[in-house]
Length: 65
Image 1 (tube, one colour):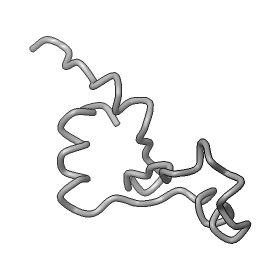
Image 2 (image 1 turned 135 degrees about the vertical axis):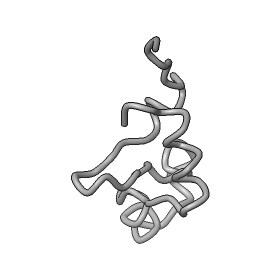
Image 3 (image 1 turned 120 degrees about the vertical axis):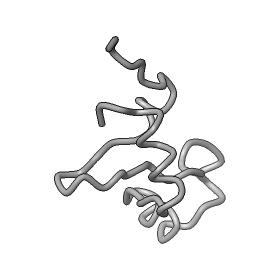
Image 4 (image 1 turned 180 degrees about the vertical axis):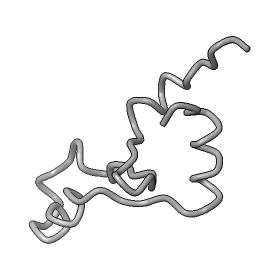
């Protein structure tokens, strides 16, 4: 069976931790930062998780994650 291709956009956005859970970076932390509070920016620094439905989809488009 041939190798499966990974989705290029998803490769750049999602990563797996040691337990195999899929993690992502939070949105809204790129521009218009002067309007956002320090508390908001502190929370945006942390990586977020995915729910079950999204995890299943990501695992299909990233077969080797």
